[in-house]
Each structure stands twice: as structure tokens, then as C-alpha cells.
Image (cartoon, rainbow, N blue to C red; front, side, top):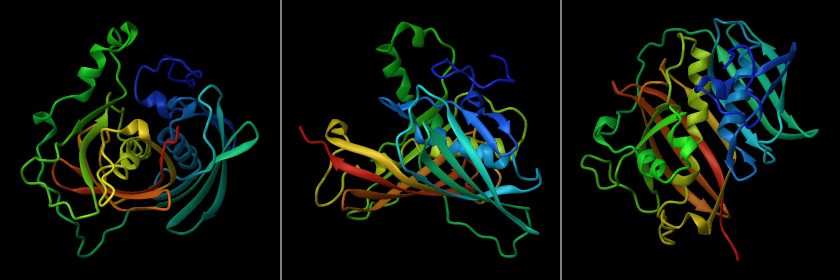
Length: 298
């Protein structure tokens, strides 16, 4: 695939980088295409990642993303491109702020605020300890069983956009689950190497990955209702908002542990927290998401 162009809507991508690629139309205007995350709905993690990519294109290379806050306002249509309009809200001495509006069919579908800063030392730096869980090499690949039943064109394709390994809930060493606060632990990384050492590319890739399992954490076994993870057809899930903080350098094409928990589910909404750790135990990023959680009605 030509690295200088954006993949056409519906076109097969050849590497994870293609999922983040956007075209610059004007100084503060960009365009991208997103695949479906649900039938006829663009995957929210890709929309957020492309919006962050657009914001980062307008910031000095020395500043790095340290936080983002996004709101999903309407479902995107994976059959049509999305325009990303960047507002250069502030360029301060240390920090810079960008606001991005994602527009499709003349309607706003997503908004993002992102903050960038120059790196600096922190006296007394600290972090929480990484949970003791089995490593990704010890866990089965969930895609293998699915691929056996997948269409032939998928089985013959050498490309897969991401790698996931789910840690079983009964694995030894897991932190105790508090009543009413279900948790899950997932190892993840991009399915193909990311070129170079561009920090923006790494954080945008992790933004994409962070939206894969957070919403589902809110629909795990929740006391006292005990919504089972085996009944996804009865539960409607959709991301409402998404926030991330990036603490330390990392590579999204190397295994990261996503430790997630959901402290609340009520009023048709569920809240999930998550921390990302690299295999050396460094806490590299945190994420929080609120999701719509509804029981499907006949």
C-alpha cells in the first residue's frame, strides 16, 4: 500500500499504521476513514486515535501528548470519510492545547481536547505496582479459534491489526475482586511493528487499543445483578466519553498489560478505569471511560 495516501473506505489495510493515517486538506483540516466496530458504526477508538493524530500534526515535535478527553456524540458511518477540524486553542511556554471536532455528513460525531507538553524531570517520581499476572506468552491467542470459522480471505491474509491475550479470572496472583467492582486483565499490542520511535505514533496507537475492552468491563459480572459476560447479545454497549493520561514512554507494538475495573454501573451507564503497564512493570498510561450499558429489549 502506498504510504503517502489514506486507505479508501472499506479497503484492506496492510499494517496497523494504516489505521491511523489521515490526509491533510488544509492547515488545520484533516480527513480519515474508519472501519466498523459494530454494524454500521465506526470504531470509536480509531476515531479518537485519528483525531489525536490530527491534533499532534499541529504541535511542535518536542511537545508530547500527556492527556486527552473525548466525547462520542453520534455514531460514525464507516462507509464515508471523516473530517477532523483542529482548533489551536493555546501554545504556552510549556503546555499546548488543541481541540478537535470530527465531522461527518455536516454533523459533529466526536470532540477531543488534547494537551501536549515538553518533558521534564519529576523529583520523587512514583507509581502503583503492576499486578502479578501470567505473561502473554503463557496465554492462548483468542483469534486462533475464531479464525478457523472465519471467511477464507481472512485465513489467507497475513495481516492482523492487533494481538490480545485475556488473563483468566482464576489465575493465581490476581488482586482480589471487590464486591460490585468487576475486573479484567488483558495483554495487548499492535499486530504489526510500528516504524521509528515517534512518541505521537505510539500514543495514538494506544488510544486505539484502549477502546477495545473498557466498555465490556462495565458489563462483566456486576453485583447484585450478575450480568454475565456470556450474554453479550442481551447487552447494548457504546462508549460515551473517553479520557487518557500518558505517564511514561512506551511502545504500543510491545506487550502492555491493561488492568481494568468497573466501580459503578447505574442509570444505564457504566464506568471503567484502566492502567497500562509494560512488561518491566512501568505504569505508562491510564484510561477512564463511561459507557452506555442497556439491556436489549425484544
